Length: 158
Image 1 (cartoon, rainbow, N blue to C red):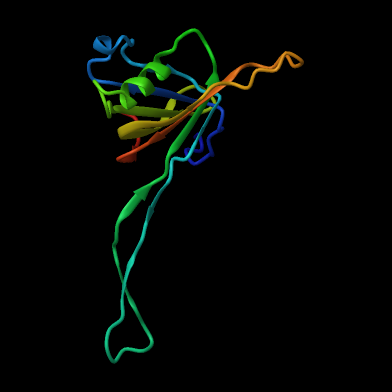
Image 2 (cartoon, rainbow, N blue to C red; image 1 turned 180 degrees about the vertical axis):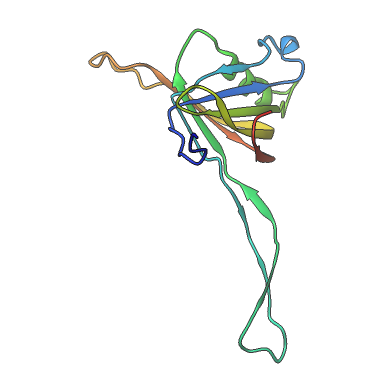
């Protein structure tokens, strides 16, 4: 029997970002459908509201407070597909301002099977960075995008 609790490798994941009416904005649909070199920032935190009960000097009550989500940073080798750049320009421009995407991140096991799915909501590009260009090195040109999220949830794949 295989051990279902064996930890996943961090190199095996897949990202897809979908924008409604992407073709009307001059982008493919989905706008992003690939593996990235690096993804960081899938984080949620909750700030508890502390209530101090009168007369009870030895305890405090913690109530559930606001949940916040960190920005997600994606890094990949730059290609001729400029859809992420087009999305940023559309989202910050005048005609399609605040164009948001939904996303899916699939974490795979060593055999390539989908094991965990992160569903991203209200994705808004907040930063895009061109690769550092250096003629002395033969490194891959890495572009970087930072995305703000409204929320996300994690689930087992169907």
